[in-house]
Image (cartoon, rainbow, N blue to C red; front, side, top):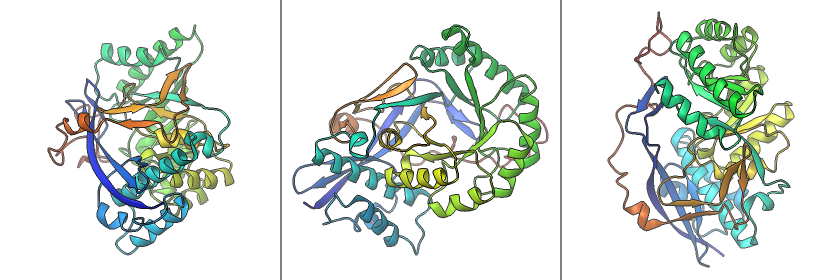
Length: 382
């Protein structure tokens, strides 16, 4: 069996409301979702979600190869890109192809990926994450009520610009989740998306912790700042979570060595093999691991097979346009189905009909503001 080609598509996640974080927002609620379909000479096609950057060059590392050799092909893709660098978006291209190869391998075995990887329980604990920065109070409550109706009892809010605003919004979500669970204390997290300096982070979170119990604070300072993350961790009660924007074990190693991370995260876009390796590294340090991202299907399957998974991020309750995903959410967990592979079916006609190719978006949560980390007073407009 051999890999014969690929097709690069882009669909949309239609949130139906603005989504964003401390860095910016997509006011129209439309988020492009690139995906790659990997074809074989036996008619089996794998699906991977991730960037198309340098796709021709990266694909050359697996073309003509047996797709069942997934981990060896993953390292082959890394070697193919090591001179120019395989971090950032190129690492996402590798992750998309890697996920598609795992999909093929599990389809050939006639098993869902979670079972092929050695998972025993198809349920994966979820927490709600509405990418909710800037929502008015009534909309915020409505969004998290929908999660609560699926049994979700923990939530992560976007914040970091105004401590009073964050305190109020976290309180609203706490009450929504508590009401849905008969008064039980819910779990609360705050994601600052690298918008603070070290001292800003400690001051902001310390103020919140006067009245709120936070499980973790995510990306309080820059992702690579091992000393800064450790400083924040020592100054607050909450755990420090980070890792979704780190690419490769070499980027995690200094943070773990410095004791800078309490919750180790990886993004769905970086692929299944990367997640499994990061999870093993985290386990060696007695740390939990948590997948991040919209439609993190591949990592949900992989999460069933690692001993240190704590919870996975549940973003939109509806999959991207043209994707049918064999996953449901109930009783506060993702429940994986029995479809072979990832359980993702792509309606290529529906995806082709989506106007997702308007080019790079000039603003949004992917663009770091000029004043990030340099705001003297609260700024609700950044």
